[in-house]
Image 1 (cartoon, rainbow, N blue to C red):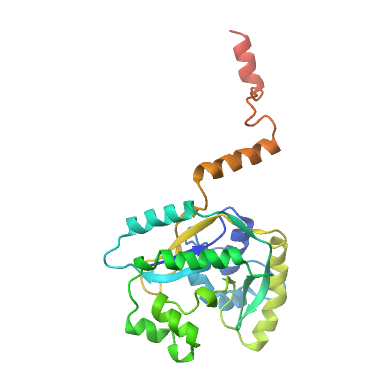
Image 2: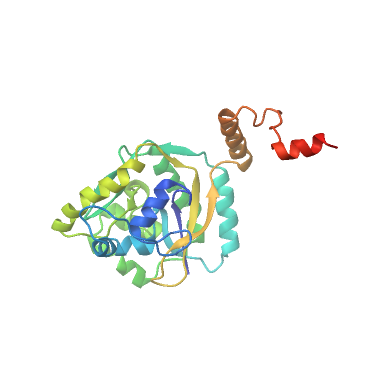
Length: 266
């Protein structure tokens, strides 16, 4: 089994729903989803172009998949992640956009987020003790001959070339595409996703992902809110109170008419 620490929007977030539809799999339930109907692409086209990210699910990696250190347990990892998340402050990424990531399409911030960069670096440092050392085969699969010097150093120190100064927040939507497919997919992707990208992306939790066995689809194991739970609860109550002044004000809501009538008849 391998674990990964990632960000993914809450299950009820509209962005999660459209991404699950596009990728053909819900990263929370692990169940297949119905592919969307988009102009310019058939269902077979979408399924083919999304095969790679479908297995990994809709998320942004903070700490890439790792085997648990022999001296660590899953319960220790969960406890540490809960405490770590509770000590972080929620924040927002101003806006995501459809962007080229090598030969793939995905979502990236229009402006790099310093807060996200720092959070990712802190996650890698904090949870490095939970990571088993890379095997020789795992190092070779990273194709070390093609890495830059900082990436090569990261691979051997942190188990991932793309951390620290090499980290870039991104959420993959396709696998590698040929030139004609890159052009073919761009407009349908923008039509489908851009209505969901108009507002800031709230970074309010971290998700622990699991890969049950080599090559198995990754899915959310647990989600951990950022910030103290009591603080989050107060913020949520305040938000509801603004929407409905009777909430949290000590005022009672009107009883349903039937219940009120029964009480009056006593």
